[in-house]
Image (cartoon, rainbow, N blue to C red):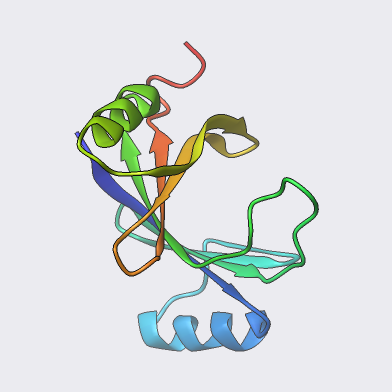
Length: 120
C-alpha cells in the first residue's frame, strides 16, 4: 500500500517558514533543531529544511513529496515496467531506504520503504 508520508520544503528562510507554519497550523513543531523544523499533520510530516549546497553525489535540496511503500525495489521495478524513469535508484540513506523519480512537471517524488520492511 502506498501512502503519503512527507512533504519536504527546502528554504533559505527557515525561521520565517517555521513561524508561518506554526501560525497557520496553530501548533509548535514536534521537532525544532539546527536547520530543520518538523510538523506532524496526522501521519504526514511537514519537513522544513534549511537549503544547502549539495556535495558531490549528495541529493539536491529540492522540495518533494514522499510516499511510503512496502518494498521500494519492487515498486521501482513496477514503475519502470510501466514506463516511468527512476532518477535515483533505491539506496540506503540515514533516514531510510529510498528512491527518487519526477512527476510530469519535474517535481521530485521520493519512495521510501516502510520501516516494517527496512533492513530485512
